[in-house]
Length: 434
Ligand SMILES: Nc1nc2c(c(=O)[nH]1)N[C@H]1C(S)=C(S)[C@@H](COP(=O)(O)O)O[C@H]1N2
Ligand SMILES: [Mo]
Image (cartoon, rainbow, N blue to C red; front, top):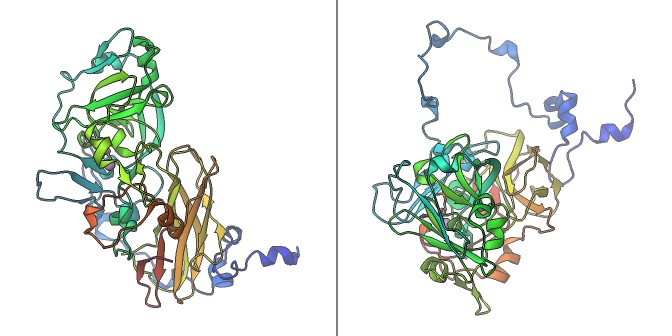
């Protein structure tokens, strides 16, 4: 059967960007026919041989499995690897992971003073203040309420803060954007427990408190508490990791990390915010217009490319899959566009299904690298109508720093502008502002 011309044209790369139509992959023969650069050798050149592991019995299965020893370098980076007693950060190696779920051992951590060693038998959750009947919950008691599961990202408000720097900081995705992760969380909705305690009509806020030594406390509007707030007990099917809040944490889907109180032990309903130390100082900043930026809750729509990205060298000319993650604290990702020419032309990326609200969405785009310099960018939109701003648009509103502080010392919060990766002729990938 003859193919008509319009179909044949769909095999051509998108002009300017060298993006490839996905349909051409389904037809096969892409490498030779379209890109002209094949990424694999023909089978005859390298017949299979029996490697040593094919000739002996394999390892005995362990009660709790560990990954292959060849994967040890896929790990979090620590802000204080020697265990120095101060705020501890562990950053997720997003450039080395795929899909949308962060394995529990790779979830990022921000802890003001480390993970307390909580005995779940002795841990209690108190709900009091402007309620009809204050109640204390044990872990056993919580297990008897209806549980729900949902995918949700958690992002530190300070994630991506290096992009407030006046010059692009050379770091990889993990260093720049590694304070965000996504898990399936299972637990009891806070609204279920507030049904049990009853809510006084004066209650407008709740103050959540952790059981770690600094007793981090944050005020949360009660409306969020009655909406999708969860007392999370499980992370990707197993109990929470100690550093992520074992045995229970507050999960506020889509809202900034520090409000998701770990090692949760107390929720007090109040008629006004507590103006606690963290929310008055650490998480309140002064905008270019002189106003304070306080009680911003939502982690705004954002995306970045994880492959290729700085630190991952291009392995020759030809076909690649550009891939990355997008998410929004306001809802579902509606669209991701990618550019390979620094934002001059754009094409829609494929979104991995299902696309879930306030969760990671993986996007991808087949691309041909022809050996010339390229600048890769991604831009996301959510179904609430928000568009990810360019970096220039973002800093015009929110300001940027005058000097370049060390990577870990950025006070600024909620950067969600576009990130740009430049690829040079040698295949080196660098962070640039475009
Ligand atoms: N009790 C308590 N809760 C806490 C913190 C803490 O230090 N203590 N850190 C907060 C901050 S700043 C962030 S970004 C998130 C990080 O959650 P994670 O460590 O599970 O990724 O937890 C928040 N909850
Ligand atoms: Mo944070």
